[in-house]
Amino acid sequence: MSAHESMEHAEHAEHASGSNKKIALLIAVIALFLAFSETLGKSAQTESISKNVEAANLWAFFQAKSIRRTTVQTAIEEMKVASATSPDEAVKAAAAKQIDVWQKTAARYRSEPETGEGSEQLAARAKHAEHDRDLAAARYHHFELASAAFQIGIVLASATIITGMVALAWGAGLLAVIGLVFTGIGVFAPHAVHLI
Image (cartoon, rainbow, N blue to C red):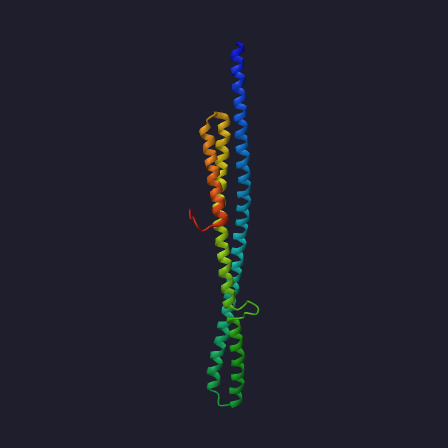
């Protein structure tokens, strides 16, 4: 091998080494973005599950309050019928007093703003938890799409080192941008795009 050929070979090796360093840096940056999207995705997934459990518990509590209210209202109706047929005024007075107590109880089962445990408040809280669950689920789906784009980008960038095809590096960069877009949508406007 002549000195000229040796020099050309060294220049080619130096160029390839510099190119590989740039690709390695691209891989590192995409991997950083992947770590962020995975962390955000896991957090959103956990919140979605937590809010789903909260909503289910609140709806179960709502149902229990509704059953109690229905039971009390049924007792009120039975007491009204029973006292109406009684000739004794003392029985009618006692029944009226009991009916009043039960009506207050039924009203409390329907609405109890001081504790937030009336059926109206429970329904509102359950709907709020469902909204939060849906928001977290939408975020999770966008973060998952972002993670997929970042992972494929890393694979393409890695393939660039092996094949030397610069187009793969450009594809990796484009996928990183797409991943960033989906991460941004997940953070700022999770309901803006519905892909899943």
